[in-house]
Image 1 (tube, rainbow, N blue to C red):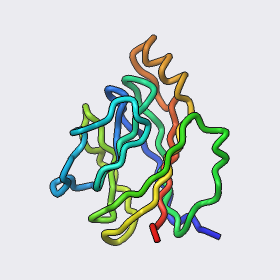
Image 2: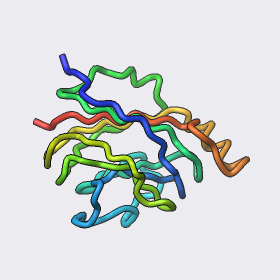
Image 3: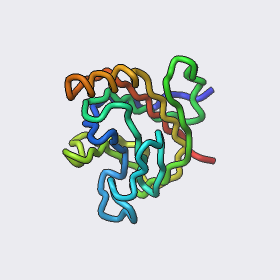
Image 4: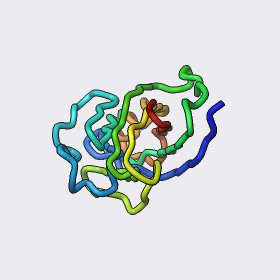
Length: 154
């Protein structure tokens, strides 16, 4: 049975339908955010970077990042609007949320004490309401929610 080792809650400033989690220090990344972003694709993985496509154009999404010591229990995918899974390679073991308009947030999200390969799941809910509010009022706050789960790749 896998154990939760860390949970971090933060906001993501979504701009142009996008935000990402990437290495805290992006200086060594071959493709830093937002270069080569794929418009309309829910999850796109690059070395040291995880792009997430939002349903709303401009808003603040609520993000919960969890780190597990093994594959986490099934979250009940039926309660989520979108779900995707992949592999993430970290050179530092520390990620941060990045946005197109504000750049890197101040909050570090430690995955481990150093480099490593991680499995990652991204769940999202509240997408149609975020899309509606973003279109009607130009913004929304914590309407669209994300759960991002990391665990070591074998």
